[in-house]
Length: 191
Image 1 (cartoon, rainbow, N blue to C red):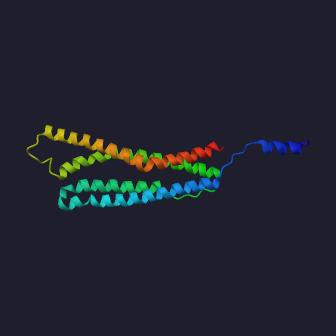
Image 2: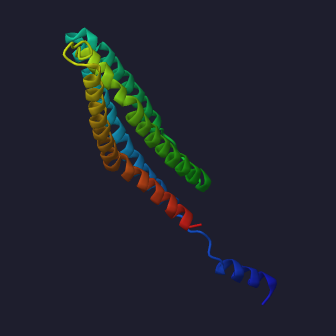
Image 3: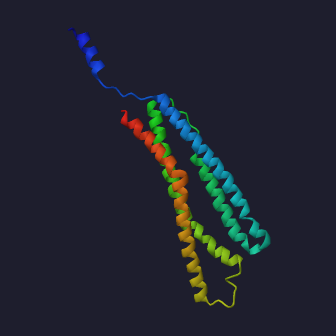
């Protein structure tokens, strides 16, 4: 055996990563199409909800603060959704891996920011609703009763917001994030 035959045997014996880029790209395209549909539906629903939040202000002018707050949250959320979905074509292995890591990070940041806004800023709509419904001006309510009712509404609102937000993420976006992580694991297992 000469040196060339030994080199050929050695090269043939090595296990090189067998990555099916076509299948990986197809899986990524399927995932992207699912995300695009989810985001488009979500943007339409959120835009409609934002427009509906303006209706109470037409009948009760003091509800303008609550309606404006709803519009601000709606516009912020639609902007976040549009930023979540970005079109990218990645032809080679390193770009696909980097793209998957970037998308996973973007998803995690989207979920974290949305949770923060929903848990911290959205309960601020309760005082605006109390103002719009003239509850602060009710002479029958003492300051203690007003504070207690405000606290009760905060607790109920925060609990319902927490439950709704977590269910929302579990149903809509956690499966998409898990799919991305699975694609990344497949790519890393072939290395």
